[in-house]
Length: 203
Ligand SMILES: Nc1nc2c(ncn2[C@@H]2O[C@H](COP(=O)(O)OP(=O)(O)OP(=O)(O)O)[C@@H](O)[C@H]2O)c(=O)[nH]1
Ligand SMILES: [Mg+2]
Image (cartoon, rainbow, N blue to C red; front, top):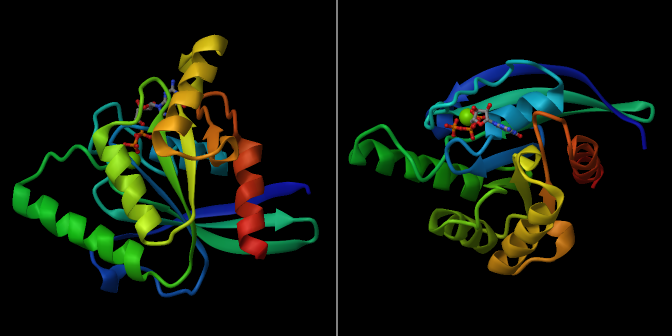
């Protein structure tokens, strides 16, 4: 199937359930540690330089950001949201704030009406951290379908890369198809991820 992104735009930054957009579209959600490359991946997918703000300093994204995207699949078009969540495992904010955040994200993931699947990003250079394991278990417990995206694949050589992919699979207890290597610098994995998204949209 020939898939092209025909439109992408920033919609809103939500800080509570009430401020999430109302248009009833399917959502694809990105979660992962701060600095893992969530915002960069959204830019790579949409072919935009700075649709989502990225930064070398962790903790850049601090709100739930909604991007409305339209894909062309054969001769129909489909609209959906890409949803950029703040990273876990890091917070330049108070404990109270962090707790409020965790609660809002938990509510969003538990009760949002049409999350098709969640991309959990894991930095491919390292084995999954405790916070990654916890987040994965939480998503599974919420019955959300999860695709693991192993980021920054451009930073590893071929042999190490395969070794690390296997380590991620084993740590999480998932099969090979559930882990997709990605590089936002080289756009590696982009067409595979677009395929997964297109399939989730037509279901
Ligand atoms: N080499 C390489 N660097 C990447 C890749 N993806 C992201 N980066 C870099 O990693 C850093 C963090 O990227 P972001 O996209 O801002 O990460 P994030 O997950 O959105 O971070 P928070 O918003 O803080 O949660 C930036 O310096 C990016 O340039 C990649 O595929 N390859
Ligand atoms: Mg970000």
